[in-house]
Amino acid sequence: MQNFVFQNRTKIIFGKDTETSVGEESAVFGKKLLLHYGGGSIKSSGLYDRVITSLQEQGIEIFELSGVQPNPRVSLVREGVSICKENNIGFILAVGGGSVIDSAKAIAAGAKYEGDVWDFFTGKQPVEECLPIGVVLTIPAAGSETSGGTVITNEEGLYKRATGHENMRPQFAILNPVLTYTLPSYQTACGITDMIAHILERYFTNEKNVELTDRLCEATLKTIINNAHTVINEPTNYNARAEIMWAGTIAHNDSLSTGRIGDWASHDIEHEISGIYDIAHGAGLAIVFPAWMKYVYKHDVNRFAQFANRVWDVEIDLNNLEKTALAGIKKIEEFFRSIGMPVTLKEANIADEHFDEMAKKATERWPLGNFVKLHEEDVRQIFNLAR
Ligand code: NZQ
Ligand code: ZN
Image (cartoon, rainbow, N blue to C red; front, side, top):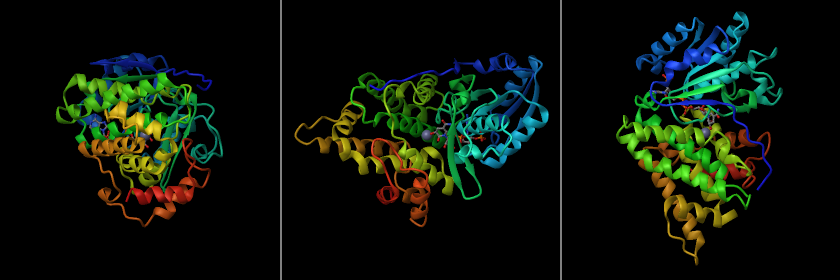
């Protein structure tokens, strides 16, 4: 096991009606905030009104910036940075999903920086200071509610890039599973796929003695798999929604990374797809992950056989571990398909015209991944496997 430091400062407030505490939690950070949200789901669900009431009860002055799109854009981030600077705003409240939270995090860093916020995403400038942010989560998926990362798309060149810092972790995250009842089943499935991918990125490691985190990963995966069809078929099933919501946070709060080095190539490859084609991140991962698995499984057939056996209950064939490993990859593909995800590029109406560009962009800064290092040609092969 590797040495590690684990610290996740985000206070989690979980359960029914918890959004009513948002005013009290926010007031700790001052009497002025930027309320950041997306395209309208929080208005139609009534959540917006409840948040405003709770903030007003605390006498908080509210500035608003809405319109965050899935795959959030740097142009709106720049707008948010200007609003914060011009009005001397000291706190950002993100109400929504990963896109809103990521946009809020980028604004939080940009508000404390003299230069252009995109500098953080090109590597020109590391993130140092950030405004504090708080979250009311409406979709369990990205795990951004406790992560120290943000992913933003630059419309110029269609670059989707990530950056991060410990100071970006939200101060608090309010998680009420009831708020997820209104999710369309496609978005629920994208979220489920993303949280599974966050665990798999950590699971496929070259570190040998990590039994505890292996088993925590497997337990979280099994919980997600066991509850996935329930939340899709019964959107108002509180217990299943609660399991999925908490699993989404556990998947990405970094406790499952302790003592091990994760891979993350599939995420980087997916960001090229959603950067150009603007598809949901989860759908992109359902396509990329099985292809990545097929490309790399021979690197550690034992680990892939363990995954097949412990997560998917595939019987281990000791005379043919490769067969067991491949059966596990088939299981995850079938699972993604069963929840309505595309598992090939064709199913997402994506042809091969940008394979070269995407492979080049994905690897132009450094090779991808840690489990197996991937170069431009490897990424092109993975796109070919995902056709
Ligand atoms: O904009 P509104 O109207 O709110 O609609 C949203 C949006 O269209 C809708 N939605 C959210 N909650 C809802 C709802 N609709 C009905 N009822 C609700 N309760 O869902 C749509 C998708 O929302 P989005 O925030 O884009 O989803 P998600 O949470 O999956 O976030 C995806 C983004 O997170 C990034 C992804 O790359 C992608 O850009 N990621 C961020 C990470 C991080 N910061 O740690 C890690 C992840 O790997 C990921 O890369
Ligand atoms: Zn993800």
